[in-house]
Image 1 (cartoon, rainbow, N blue to C red):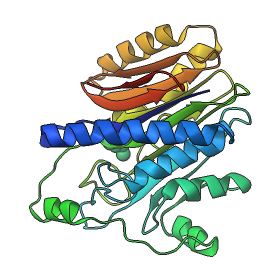
Image 2: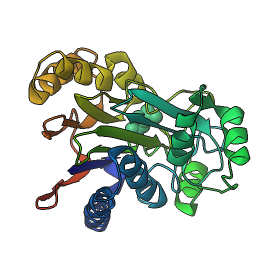
Image 3: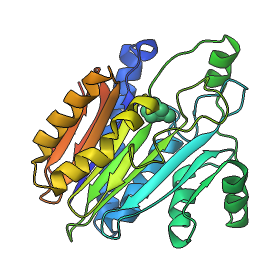
Length: 280
Ligand code: ASP
C-alpha cells in the first residue's frame, strides 16, 4: 500500500519560508491521513478522499482557494480514474461546489461520465452537493490587483491498495485569469490517467500537458514494457521539444513511485507506512 500526492508547483509568489513549511506539513499530514484511510478502503476511494483534503486546504489552487478566471468567476475541474475498470469520470469548469472531486466520483456511476459547466453544476445539485463558495479573500485581492500570480497549483493523488489496484484523482482551480470556457488538462487523460499497470497525475500548464499527452503516454509506455523511470525520462524529454511546463506523480503495479518536474519545484509527499518523503 502506497500513497503519493502533489500540490502543484511552488510558485515565485509563495517562496516564503512560512508558506514552504506550511505546504510541507500539510502534504505530510494529508499523505498520512490518506494512508490511514487506505487501510480499510480501496485505492479508488482513497484517491478521492486524499484529493478532497487537498481541495479543503486553502494553500492549494483546487476547491477552496481556487484561482479566479478573467471574468471574476471561479471554475474548477476534477477527474478520477479507476485503474482496474479503466474508467475515467470528471467535471470541467464547475462552479460553487466544495469538492469537485466528489462530483467526479459520483459520475462514475453514470453512462455520461464527464460533465461541463452548468450541466455539471445541475448534476451536482441534483445529487445533494450544496452550493458552496470556494473563494478566499487572498484570491479576490490577487484578482482585483490584476496580479497574474501564475502559481501552478493543481492537486492530485495516486494510490496502490493492498490488492495491488491503482487509482488516481486530480483537481484544479485552473491557471488563473483564463478566458472563460478554457479547458484544463486535469479532467482529461493527459492530466489524469490509470490502468492496471500504472497511474499518473499531472500539474503545470494544461496546454503543455495536453500537447504532450503526458499522463496517458507515461501509462502506455509502462504498459508496453518500459520501466516507470524510463517512461518518465522519455516523456519529459519529449516535453522539452515544446518547452513544456509540467510535473507528474505516479505509481506502477509493482509499487514503484515516481515524481518529476520540468521546472522546480513541484510540491509532493509520499507515504508507505514507513517512509514519509516530501519536497525540500
Ligand atoms: N494544470 C492546471 C491547468 O492548466 C493548472 C495547474 O496545474 O496548476 O488548468
